[in-house]
Image (tube, rainbow, N blue to C red):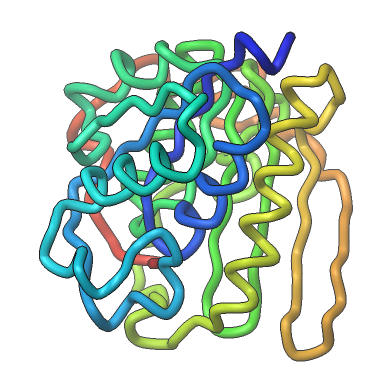
Length: 240
């Protein structure tokens, strides 16, 4: 696919989405979508590099679109001032060729994974807590998919960045890897099933391929998840 006609969605304009959006805006893609329902907070400015003091209290999407248009006037920046929800997920992701997902809760991550699978859209997932970050590339038909690695929403108290903390440099490395994989996907390279983990304490970056699970509920031989069921996505925070 030509980058000049490519449409990429940034899902979550936080510590991952901000540097990813800024990098993608300069790559010559046609449309860059921004999806988030949160507001800019002063405590996050050190890692959410699209925003400044004057943006505090403003909707993240508005501030991000304004800054991206200033820095990359040639890209068509499309605003989605909403959280990805079961009611709108399919409508939103179908507008794009690849989704760059850096959302702040497990419900959104699993919803994005499921919606992209049903819509036939590639997705690059990422998360970071403390010094550790991960990136997973998933093709439009999975095999493997996000649920091959993380079967379902956690039922116990998983640590989130607000509680455990997250290091800004780790977010930068992970966001760069997300952008690299999104562009690789658009250029026709096979990224599906490739997992990267980065340890900021040791600067060790590991890359490996995960195998699809034949019993995966989403992309396995006999999938049990066949539609977006609102009851299946109970918000649980995990990263920011």
